[in-house]
Amino acid sequence: MTSSRLGMIALATVFGLTLFTVVDGALAKSGQADPGYQPKAGSSHAVTTFYADVMPILQENCVDCHQPQGLKPGGMVAPMSFMTYEETRRWAPAIARSVMEGRMPPWFAAPEHRGTFRDERYLEEDEKAVLAAWAEDGAPAGDPADAPPMPAFSFAAHDGWSIGEPDLVITFPEPFLVEDDVVDLYVDIPLELTADQLSEPRWVKARETRPGSPAVHHILGAFAGLAPGSTPTIYEEGYSTLLHPGPRTIEFQMHYNKKPGAGTAVYDQSSSGVVFYEPGDTIRHVVQSDWLPIMRFLIPAGDPNYSASMVHTFEEDMQILSFSPHMHLRGKAAKYEITYPDGETEVLLHVPKYDFNWQHGFRFKEPVLAPKGSELELTLWWDNSADNPSNPDPTRDVRFGRPTTDEMGFGFMSMTPVEPREIIVGEPIPEDILGTQSAVTDTSDPASRR
Image (cartoon, rainbow, N blue to C red; front, side):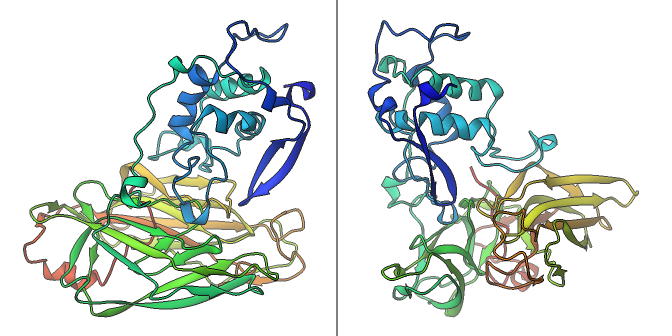
């Protein structure tokens, strides 16, 4: 890709993503459908066009987020749409650079896990080459007749909810003001779940938390869950957690993070929506979770590779459904390794380059059997050195703390007993379930996404 082809490129940072903007107008003048267009002299590839070659790749991998009403994954809102040629063409250099450098699409499991998890975000090498060739050739449009059918999106039809119309929505009773001087704020906001809203225990089929402002970084709570890069939870048929009725108080543990200054104050009124199973449906797998906490650590100032571990022992035969590591700005890597009762060990997930801005949930395509007595070791690494560009202060020792400038260490795990149940929705709920499921307890996010 030549500098004359790309024109002058200026860096911009939007929502934590490094983007490129053409500032000399070169691409704005290019890319029109032209039957006589030929690739540059010496090019080894044929003409690559938006409608025939690029649009299918974007639809398959990008436009879930890159659309005007796209997913709002933990407050991370794609700052541009790739739905149409007119919207996309000026971003051709940025798209090419981002995919060739591996920054997009965001996915951070080690390569050896490819094919292990659902909703993996990979581009094949030939797909990357297509996007690079399109940018290099001047982003030609091609023939609109070659365009694939536009995917059907449901966001607008359901008032922006990607899970469809919720059966229950709970939100702040009034907007919360995140004031001008706030940089990093944790606050617990109580919400009342009334008996009128939910009069009996219900089985959850899908749930989604929507941030009410760009200042929301993440939300924790028995009812809600949201982190940068997370996606709505849509359980596979027969999998569920139980939501207990009101009246009771539910707390949203809110974390706000923004740049301070006059005029930066924003109001937030975040909300969560739930879709329930219908009477007559069958629940066969009651989903549980564990936070896998690592809370007692002291990361020395300047340490580039500090690590800490914890071990979870399975007390019955379980199926592991998903993992979701969580650290703050010094987070560097994560690894989940299981030791089976016969002594065999297996790395179930290695995240060699953890990214605070994209906290993925990794959901297995096939649940992992963890026989009784198996031990799961979670190891997390942090980089507290000056070489970490995200490090807010490499000169101080760091302990566990809620603010982003401190650190956390969790390895959220979603799981279910191996032995299936036969629970008919609408019939009495077994006492052992009522006694252990005090609320929606699957905090690890993705015991599923479509």
